[in-house]
Structures are given as C-alpha cells and as structure tokens.
Length: 286
Image (cartoon, rainbow, N blue to C red):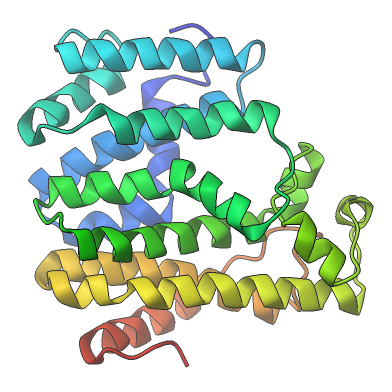
C-alpha cells in the first residue's frame, strides 16, 4: 500500500495494537467477537500509524487507505488487515462513516496543530475516538441512542487521557492539543510545553484537564452496567485503563512534560477492581 513497508506491515500493526488498552480489555470477550474487534482496531492502528509515523506524503497514504477501505466494502481488499476487516464489515453490515471519520481525523492532524477551545478539541475526538465505540457497539449488536452517548463519553475520555499523557511527545511533533483558551486561562504558553515547565500554573492546568477526562469516563461508565455480562466487564476495563492513567498523571505531580506517566500493573488491578464495583452500583470515581 505504499509508505514504508515496515511501518504498515500488518504483523507489526497488530503487535502494537495488542499492547494497548483496547485489545487488553477485550480479552474477556468470546474469541469470535474479539477477532472482529481486533480487525476494527487493526484498521484504527493502521490509520494512526499512517498519520503519525509515515515518511513522505501522509495525506496521499491516507487517501490510499481510504481507497482500500472502499475495496473492503466491495469485498475485494488487497491489504491483509483490510481483508480481515471486510469479513467484519460484511457480517455486521457496518457503515463506512465511522471508518471515514477515523481517516479524516488523521488528515486533520496533517494541517491542524492547535485547538482554540475545548469544544474544538471535542470535535476532533468526534473523529478520532468516538467512531471506534460506535463500531464496537455494532459488533456487539447493542446500538441504541443512549448507549452511543455513553460510548462517546468513554471514548472521548480515553482520547483526552492519552493526549494528556503525551503532551511532551505531541509538542515535539508540533501538535498542541491543550486548548489555547485553557493555556491563557492558567497563564501558560506553548513554549513552555517544549521546555519542560514545572511551574505551579502548568500543574494547575493539567489538574483541570485531568478532571475533565475523569468526568467523561465517569459519565460513560453506566454503559458497562447497561450491557452487563462480558461486554459490560470489557467496557469497565476500558474505563479502568483510562482512570489508572489519570491517577498516574496525578501521582507524577502532573509531570507530563518529562515523559508519559504510566500506571503500574498493581495500580491497574486496584483501579479495575474499583471500577467494576462502581459500574455495578452506579457510583462515580472517588
């Protein structure tokens, strides 16, 4: 499919995908369901790699992925990951729109490097994160307006969590996802994101953003109780992964400019246990 062969190699893409929160949490689901979810996540990982890591013309590469997506919908894909995906598309009669939104998010990353308001950033998450949740619900055959709203809250919360972990890495790429209005509100500048600021003002900014992400995860957690069973446990596990990452950011003193804070396995286990209880009894994070 063009680009660097090692970058878009299907085995590499799936190896990287399996290390992340989504596939780890989905292990509680039946193998048949998990295979379809990994086909979807493999596509998302492929698109993200093309938009973030590829050398050369990334927009052209994303265009080629979109063309391959059309082949998958026609049942004639050529890329190994897309051949896996076309079986999932056919079995669950998936729509193009969520896949196209994921591609569009990565096109936007090639031209947009700042977000003026939090509302603008939420608009980006509508493209970059929420479509995955819509596709998951479709595979689970559990789509409803209320569930889609809960799913959007979870997916946006997870996306924001990842962005707050990776502030330094993104700044080095020239991308600033912290809303410009929030930087001004807390007296912070883009320049200090690149120099590793430890000012109290920056810590207060990050505390504010972490609270926003946690609130979204809490708002989406009822989806776990509503779905119940293995699917509910998987959703609670997604939320727990985000919650644990936010705790890691807090425990680092919001030091996201010197590296990406990551939770320990013991912390992940504790947060998962608490999240499963919260989902069962309808509680918010403490």
